[in-house]
Amino acid sequence: MSVQTLPAQAEKQSEVISYDPGTGDEIGRAPLCSTEEVKAAVERARAAQAAWANTSFRERRRIILRARALLLDERDQVAQLISRETGKPVAEALSMEIVPTLDAMHYFAHAAENLLEPQKIDVGQYALMGRSSRLVFKPLGVIGIISPWNFPLATPAQEVVMALMAGNAVVLKPSELTPLIALKIGELFGRAGLPQGLLEIVTGDGSTGAALIDARVDKIMFTGSVATGKRVAEAAAKYLIPVVLELGGKDPMIVLEDADIDIAARGAVWGAFANSGQACASVERCYVQDSIAPKFTERVVAETKALKQGLGSDSAVDVGSMSNERQLQIVSDHVDDAKTRGAQVLTGGCRATNLPGLFYEPTVLTNVDHRMTIMRDETFGPVLPVMTFKTEAEAIELANDSLYGLTASVWTRNIAKGKRIAELIHAGTVMVNEVVYTHGIAQTPWGGIKESGYGRTHGRMGLLELVSAHHIHVNRVPFLPDLWWFRYSPRGARLFNGLARRFTTGSLVQTSLLLPQIVRRLFERR
Ligand code: NAD
Image (cartoon, helix red, strand yellow):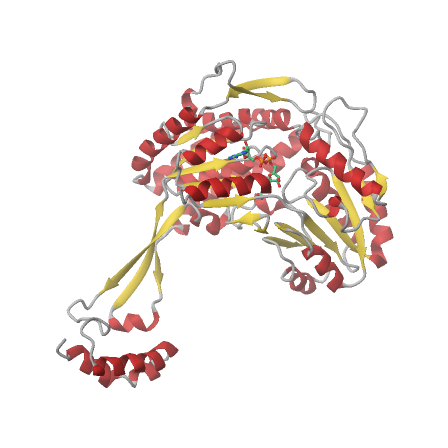
């Protein structure tokens, strides 16, 4: 379906229905795009991309900035839609989705040209032979973006902007739980004057995502769960389609005894409960040094009890509903497993009974350990398990004892120590005295290691995922045959021996000792 023309009335039997998880009310419907519709969308995108690749960065910037101006003008309305479709507070829709998206639009609109400038490569001693190399970056073609429901604007919209600025077309497959926001993204770009076909939105479920891979896009930017990520990588491998996988996390927070306890406690509470804990970078497990554990835990519990939970549309609400029943059930199962194995619930620990929708009370647990699923599997909900440690080495070991490696944080007043420990933690991003938010920084790379995925989005590294690097190599002395060309001879073999011993050291002095042999070889009758 073309963004600009996507009809509201889809065939009755093939729709995805969007609900407000805070109330259970239906808020809209979108087509469940079929394999044929996805294929047609990719073909339209491919047809449009050829001309787009030839536009100047200036022209691309003009359109992105127009879309940005529209988003800025309509931010309240968009924030309401995000809040209704996900259950998150409007405040979070603004601070965690709209602000970073506007920032990334501004950044990539202005910086992409510089970031993708051709680059000279130092070819070492080959330069003395009149050789030079440079990299030029070309768009890949059609980028397929498959996104989840937890940040339905910020996650796909920023990738759309990066892909378009790099000269690609995009086909976006949003989560079946949040199709309306994706359609809104398409509508904003359409009104900003983006040529038809360059941004196609294919709403639907997993089958639509699978069809997008089968339609042979040129790259898949996937954000979602580990299980689906593996399926996507496998399906893409059939066609050798490269994939970036932004998957789940079990992000640790280490609080050392010299940390500012009040600030660390507030950081932990925001890091664990913002977005109802449904962020891939949420604080999923907290390790606090035993000497400060009682005071820290007391502060955490006090902060948690002070949070107001309710419908996202209420501007005084801190914690909204969860986005779907399945996720709420996972949270409930993890907490129950922890309780059965001896965890202590300091606050929360159950579904909120005073609210009608999918609300789980912000929960703080202690007496937890690594046998429990709450410390091993991604919970993706408003739960903060707190465990103690004695030594730095123990904290690092606990943090690294995970299949995941997305983000982590270290809290200390000693920045040098924080940085040293940060380098020992296995994660794509490690923050010192900060949590969660670096996905919102357009300039820095985002992505994980281990089962948190591979590849990067955002920053220069993210932009480079959306282009192919072409190496252009030039010989400026084409009138001389290369030393290693035919014909071979005993003299040639002696020179190759010399090259092996001297040239490969990278030392000009060493190589210059071969000069007489090189000259003889160059003028040898071959
Ligand atoms: P999910 O894996 O269920 O779905 C993600 C997307 O994949 C959806 O659009 C879905 O329709 C699509 N999909 C499902 N099956 C598919 C298939 N076979 N082929 C192609 N596409 C398919 O994830 P979710 O529940 O929507 O999101 C939650 C997960 O996302 C969590 O694990 C979270 O940690 C992760 N996440 C990661 C990041 C990150 O940047 N690392 C950011 C946000 C969310």
